Length: 276
Image (cartoon, rainbow, N blue to C red; front, side):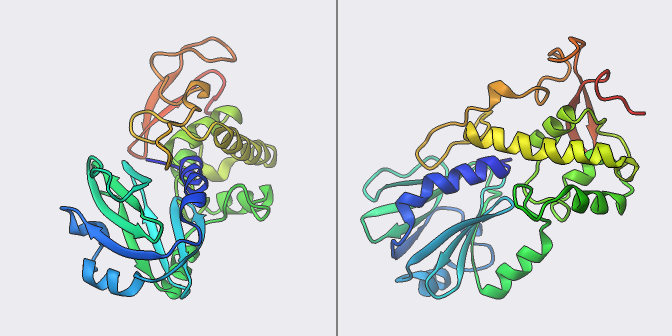
């Protein structure tokens, strides 16, 4: 599933193509559920003629702000992809929705697994979404003190707690594993057992790994690509994710391990990330 660096990479690649464009129409593919509970006619009536005044990201959501203060929210989920192409281009594989723009291009949404959504939200809906999310980990408000206070209230395993979007917004399986490796913390540690020094290490690691991935435009394993069809380049820099059971630790040379934590495959170094 695309995480913060991937969704932010898509946002940045979309900006020059969609900002200040007006929506001239919608075309639906063979999956009406992409619009949630709304019909194509309902959404088209509300957004046709509206100008895209801004494009932001909150956690793993893309927020296209329209000039009437409503928002088109796109959640890529596992395999969602966005691209801007000329209107007469053939349909994309697994294309479910085309948002027609006033310059003759389409913003196309394709999704093999059909988990992604394109929803039209009113301001109150966006505010409710924002309240459900924790702080953005690259924002100035995300401090080590805030992280420590949040972890102290959580009795669960550290890996599972960090995946909770109400604690920190935008983290997922890849970057939690990478941050825990950088901070030398075992994924099954109790979240509230961390010392002040350990929390500071974790805070620095979260921010560092996200910045590094953004510099490489995210991680691509199979389907992720930006709006220009380009894959992310961070996969080669991953220290542990996807390497448990087959790779060696870059620090100590011991074999990396893979376990299941909270139903998620988890990769770590048993020597550098001791449980005690």
